[in-house]
Structures are given as C-alpha cells and as structure tokens.
Image (tube, rainbow, N blue to C red; front, side, top):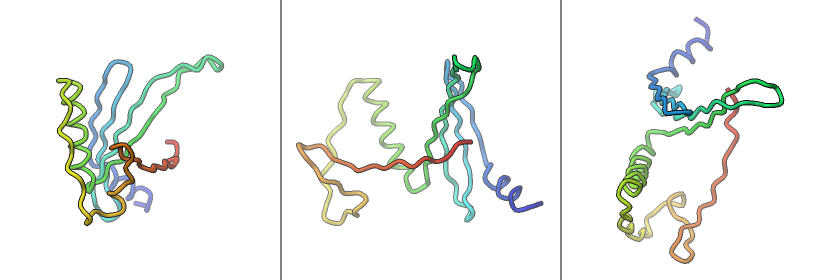
Length: 124
C-alpha cells in the first residue's frame, strides 16, 4: 500500500449523510497524521448551470477540531434554543485579564469586533 492510500484510509473514520430537502449534509470524522480526530461538515446543494445546461453541486465545508467542540456545541445549542423559543440567552460574563489574545477582541458599543480571514480550502 502506498503512502497516499495509507493517508486516505487513515482520514476516513466515520461518515453520516443527512438529506434535507434540496440540501445534503455530510458529517465526516477524519484523522490527522497524529491520529487526532476532527469533523468536517459539508453542505451540498444541487445547482443548474444554464449556460452549460448541466447540473453541478455547490459545496461549503466547515472543519471543526477537537479543541473547539465545546465552544461550537455551546454556540449551536444557544442559537437553536433562540430559534425554537425566541428567548435571548443570558449575557456572558466579562472576560478576565487571563484570556488569550485569540479569545479577546476589542469591544465597541457592547459588541465584539472580530477580525476573521478565510482561506480557500481548495476544491474537491
């Protein structure tokens, strides 16, 4: 077995497909070279290219690493709770001086400003 096959086998740990109307979601558990698991969430939508007269799939991916699972879960649960009940969440307590630079942000008018840069993760 060559290195590429070994890497591909290592990466494919678990997959769950969720079909939801015109969208399909893929939840794929993969492993890094050091056997740390992470999750990719892919949204796939079937689109029609009228110029070429063909269908194609538009995909959007999110990579979620183990160290972010709790924060991601908390944020998702908070957003879903708001959607379902209309109840605003309790305000989060102010951060202490011990926060890391990645956790801190400048605040203006009570809102956090975050500088986010997205990289093109490539096409599959």
